[in-house]
Image (cartoon, rainbow, N blue to C red):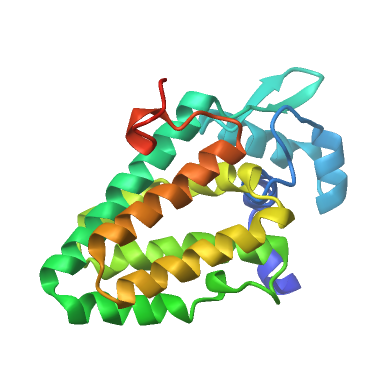
Length: 225
């Protein structure tokens, strides 16, 4: 952002964008107590707009304010994390089914597009960039189904998705994640819808397991939850 653009953005909005970005990429982890003063100093502004940003983020469920102490980053519960990943599986599986109905060419087209996506390699990406690429990979699959209602539903999960996957993802998991993305892309290219859905389920199940959460009966029918 240029200095001119930054100066045109209200301070409270800048504070909100800064803190929310840190919440979504994992820079501000669950349970951390954020200080109005520290954020204000980092952004070279007064505490008032930071307080406004904290109040806005509290209304969105990201923070819990404690007067004179700061703002606690509200931990993502196991139930919420599992619910978000279940919703992802449902929407992405729909996209695969829709593409399969449209025919092999539709599946091959999206498969080839995804095969060239940065999320299938990620070697040259920072952890933050890989985080964004991961989300974009899956959003591309959903968008390919051409159903604007499903796409909108998927996009409403964006913030919760990013926060949960930031918590689950570690640098050491990148090889597994990129391999699974590439594998899914190849399966779609081959037109194998049922196998693609199975691979998608295993991929998303890996996310909840990385959080130390049981998959539940939808993500993992063998799991007794």
